[in-house]
Length: 487
Image (cartoon, rainbow, N blue to C red; front, side):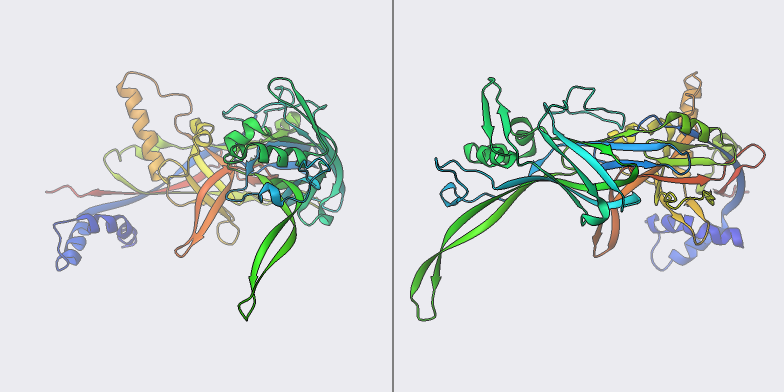
C-alpha cells in the first residue's frame, strides 16, 4: 500500500494527459492504471570526493573586495575586481545654457567627482581599517569569458601609473559605501595622441557629454569612447571581504531652470530656480565585471587530504565530486520509469574555533562535472533535468537535499548507451556530478519569488559534507514503476 501511495504522483501527469478519458471515467481509469502498475524501491551507495578548483567563472558575478584569513586553513584570501560602466538610462543633463558650473571662459566643469562602491555583505571584522587603490583601465577589456584568475595588471589593461585614487576605510563607519575622490587633474589622450587636461575626472565626463551625447546612450559606446572602466585593488588590511552590488562614478554640478508659475488670480511670473545636481554611471551585471581571487594553493591541498569529509568552499576553492552509480541503478530496470531519485548530502558540523566562522553556502547547484565551466559561460539556468539547485536545510536533514535527480541519471545512462552502441568507451567521468556554491538572483511577483539567474559565489563560504566511501557511502533512493505484463 505504501508503494502504491508513492506512485500517485507519478501517475498524476499520466492521468491529465490521457486525452481519451472523460471526467466521468477519469477516476476509474486512474485506478485501473495504478492496478496495472508495479512500483519498486531501492537504495544505492554513492561515493564523493573533494577536488580543487583553480578558478571560477567571474563574468556577471558579484564582485568582492578585501583580504581575510580563512579560519579553516589559516591562509589569506585576497580579492580585487575590475568593472566597466554604463550611463544612467533615460537621464539627461540640463541644457548647456542652464549649467552654472562654468569657468571664466564659459567652459563647463564638475564641482566634484567620486568613484563610489556600494556593498551589501561583509565577511569578517567590519570594524577594522582596510585600504584600497583604484586605477582607470588603459584600454577596454576584450569581450570573452573571464575567470577568477584573470589579472588585469598582468594582462596589460592596468598600469599603476594610471589615473586613480587611494584611501583607507572602515566598513562599519561607511554606511555601506566607500568613496574614492577623483578631484585631481585628469589628462585625456585621444586616439591621435592629443592631450587635454581637466581639473577633475567629473569635468572630463561632463565635457564629453556636451561634446557628443551619443557616447552616453549605450554601454558599448561609453566603454569604447569615454572610459574603459576601473580596477579596484586591495592594498592593506587582513580583516574582511565586502560583496559589491554596484560601483558608480558620480559627479556634481550646479544648474538653474526658468520656471513659469501661475498665481491663484491667474497672473503668471517666471522664477529662476537653482539646483545642485549629480549624474552617475554604474558598474553592475549589465557590463563586464571580474573578480581576481588569490587563494593559498598549499592550504587547499591540506583540505583535499582530509578524508573525514568533503568540502565545498568559495571563492575558487573546492567543490565536491559525486559519483552516481548509474549502471547499478538501471540494472534490471532498463525499461522501467525512474519516478524519483533522491539524495541528501549531510552536513558535518563545523568545530572550528573562530570568532568569525565561515558561512555555509545558502544555494547549492548540482550539474554534470563536464559542464562545470560551460554552464556558467552560457549563462544557463538550472533546468531540473540535468542541473538542479537546492538550499541548506538545518531543521530537517541538516544538509543539502536534491529531491529528484531522475532526469540527470537517465541523461547519463542515455549517453553511456550511445557511447557503447558506437563502439566507444564512455568518456572519463561520464557518471560524475559536482556540487557548486552559487548566488541566486531572485525576482518577486504576485505568484511568489523565483530565481531568474545564478552566478559563481565569490564571497567566502564553506561547508563540510559527509564523505561517501566504499564502506560508508551516501545513500541515494530510487522509485521505479512499470506496467504489469499481461497474462
